Each structure stands twice: as structure tokens, then as C-alpha cells.
Length: 377
Image (cartoon, rainbow, N blue to C red; front, side):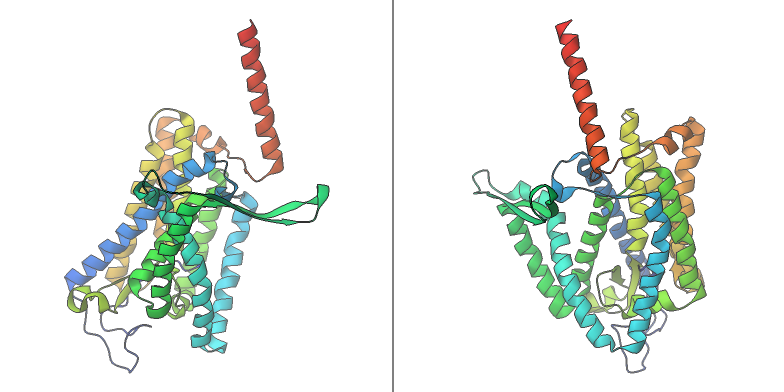
């Protein structure tokens, strides 16, 4: 996971820029401000819209849109898995040719990026299709075993409109594969972030605190303790980070002096913010107090990260500032409103868990039978 905020200005050399030992001229204050502001805006978009879509995803019944629920056990293991993955990538880049590794990764993220971007733009594109558009339904079903032992591995439902979106996304994919242009990178990065916030669900607030707390330590160690994360972020030619050129005003779209923000700094706080939105809705008070509070906290935390980085001229672990803000602000609001117990007792079941499905069916049957009894009376 890449979750460092990096600022390669003031004459530094970075991957993607000059490699002949020359240094870039210092970025202008206007260019730096534009880059920072753009990164902040790009980070907010997938969090806001991903959180809204996570509500619909939690209520949906389509197997292809089922969320993946993160439990406290998953949250506790995640920093360890992320550390092993990060260190493994670092060693790969040190041992093997960076060119061949990035070629393999480019093909991998080419496929993933197309699928993610297609899923992202599908709801927006549906508004542009005419009413008489010949839309056919399809289902991709892959099972294992037979008879009573048959188990679904893949059950993906899609239609003709989804195929059109897939075709449009493929154009962006080819552009990224051939040019590695920063706009194509950001389109894929935004799609990955939005899909992550939408489809990754924390089962409760305590799990969110465990996840964010663990990655808080992870981020500090790998950014301040070693050069591993920054090295991987600069060597890794894949859409795992959002970038924006600080020399855009001077060089236009061919600019190459980038500030960057790892997708981990968007998705990890984002799934916690999305959980608080669903908690808001569960309270049935027609207010989104905790969502807006955590969203404002994210803006504050990322803004503080950018400010500190600009002052000290060093890459910053953004979660160092985001985690205390995103957890602390909503908890303070809950304390003021006397809803701390409700917040930490809120629980979401895993829709993929057979036990949860059985309980849901039993609850539905019970409520239906009660309704029939009332009618009979």
C-alpha cells in the first residue's frame, strides 16, 4: 500500500522526470498551490461519492455488487500484510530490473483499471442511454463441484450498457498502457479509490479504529523509519497514487514534476467515513452529522499534511494526521450528543455470510407473519 504524500519540488529529481543528473527549476508558488489543491479535491471526490454509493451497495441484492466486509480480525492483520507486501515490492525493485517489473504490473493494472473505471462510470452513463436502447441481460457464472456440493466462485450480472462502459474504459486503458500519462493514471486511481470506498465495508466502528490505528503506526514507520515507501512510490509505475504536476502552468499537459498522494490515504479513511454515513442513516434522524464531521476532519487532516510537508520539504505519512482527525472529531461529536454507546454498538452484518443471510430471512419471515396476524385481528 502506498500512503505517503510526496512533494518532489525545489530541484529534486524523481522517476518520470530528468534522469541525466540535471535538476528541475524550482516550482512556482502558483504551480505548487494548484498541485496541492488539485490533490485535495481529487481525494475528496471518491470519498464523497463512494460513501453515498456504499449505502446503495449495502442495500443491494446483486451478487456482483456485494460489499466485502472487514472484521476486527482482518483489520488487525492488515498492517502486517501491507508491510510484507511493501517490503516485497521494495526488494523486487532492488533485485530485478525495474523495467520488466513495471511491464508486468502495467498489464495487471491495465485489466483491473478497465474493470474499476467501467464500474465507476456505469451509473452516470446510464443517464445518457436512450429509452429505446436495446439492453440485454447477461450473467457470468463460474461454479465448483456438482450437485449439493456446488459452490459459486464467480456470479457476475451485467448488461449491454455495462459492455459499452467497458469499451469506453478500454480506451483509457490503452492510453495509459501506451503513454503512462498522468491524467490516465489519475482516472484509474480515482476509479480504484471510489470502488474501494464503495465495496469495502467495516463491520463496526471498533474495527475501523483498529484498522486506522494499525495503519497509523505502519505509515509512520515506513515513511520516517525507512526510505522503503517513498522508493516504492517513485519506482512503481502503476495507478496506486494520484499525481498532479507542479509545473503544469509552465509545461502544460506534458509537465513532469509531480506531487503525489497514495490511494491508501484516500481509501482507508474513506471506508471509515462511509461507515459513519451508514451509521447516520441507521439513526433515522434525517441528519448526516457524523458523515459531515468526519468529512470535514479529513479535509483538515490532509490540509495539515500538505502544510507540514511544504514547511519541512519532506514526504509525510498522511495517516499520521488523518487518523487522529477522522476518529477524534466524530467521537467528540458523539460525546457531546451522548451517542457514544450507539456509535460503538452499531454493527453491520456480512451479506456474504450464510448465517447472516439466514438471520435476515428469519427476521423477514417473522416480520411478515406478525404483519399477517395484525391484519387478521
